[in-house]
Every structure is written in structure tokens, then in C-alpha cells.
Amino acid sequence: MKIVFATHNPNKLVEVQRMLPGHIELLSLDDIGHTEEIPETGSTIRENAQIKANHVSKKYQLPCFADDTGLLVDSLDGAPGVYSARYAGEAKNAEANMDKLLGELRGTTNRAASFKTVIALVLNQEKHLFEGVVNGEITHKKMGDGGFGYDPIFMPRGHKATFAQLPMETKNKIGHRGKAVQELVNFLKAKDHASE
Image 1 (tube, rainbow, N blue to C red):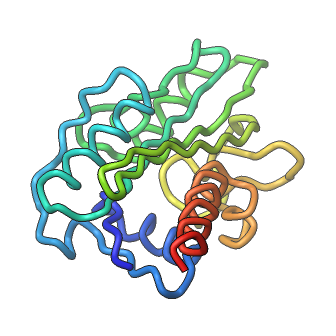
Image 2 (cartoon, rainbow, N blue to C red; image 1 turned 120 degrees about the horizontal axis):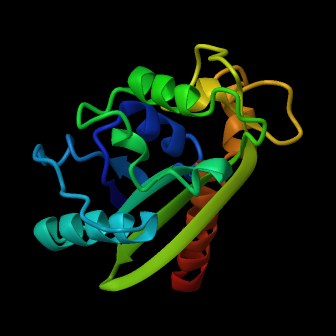
């Protein structure tokens, strides 16, 4: 089965492909020749995921899933949230985003935060949603050089290392995207068994 993952991000593609059963071939937006940005005009993480999946599925007549992820910081009333990727500007610069967030939290004792991923799947004209959340806190400085995005400043609850310091296998197991993808994988496997 071929499914489009509506992303240009090679890191995300590798992360998700590792979790899927071997018979599912994951195609990126680059693989199907989709180069333009899909406008993320939703006011929530869920809406943005749905907009992207609907757009690609309709245009290419292919099964497609899209994810949207937000970092929600308690003391900032849930910011950066839906604006996580472009928190410090439209350039979507991860270093600038982390610097801005660390600056805003300077002197703040409540550093509780959560990562939330929503995956929207369009398959056979049916729409499905999967969600994953991981709780933790924002560190006082960047630590680790793995992962991407806010990983160097997010320490998941129960761990003494940031997402950027943890092995990818651990991150996939406990992380927000890993949880949402696992829900998606379980759903696709159940579909497979039902059609046998």
C-alpha cells in the first residue's frame, strides 16, 4: 500500500517510516512532485492537520496523512501552540524559536509543557484522527544534538535527558508523534486484517 505523508521534512519521514509495517510504502510530498507550501490556516493543531491531508488527497487522489505538532507551555497560556514552527518568524528557524522561548521563560519557575501531535488520515474518502501527547518541561538551556525542532529544550516527564539527548527508539516509544503514529499504525493493521 502506498500512502503519502504530507511533509517535506526528511527527519519526520525517517522517524515515521521506521514505525510502519514493511508493506506500507511511505511517499513524501517531494516523491509525488508537490513543491508548493500548503497554507496552514487553521486555528488549531487538529485543523491544520486536516487541511493538509485533505488538500493532498484531493489533488492527487491518493491516501494521505498529515500531522501537525505544537508545543504548549503552561505559563505562556499554551503558546507557542499552533504557531510552534514559526514562533520567531516565517523563516521557521528552530534555533530562533528556541532562543525566543527560553528568553520568554527566563526567571519563570513553572516550566511545565507538553508536545501534542494530531495526525489526520484520508483513506478511501474516509477521514480519521489520531492524537499523541507527552508531558514534560522546558529546560533552562539547549542540551543534545539529536532530533529537531524544540527537542534540545524539552525534557519528557520521568527522564533526565531532553528529546535531543535520548535515542530515537526511546523518543519514538514515549513521544507525541510516536504515540499518534502508533495509533495510525494500529488502525492500518486492523484495516489490513479486515480486508484479508
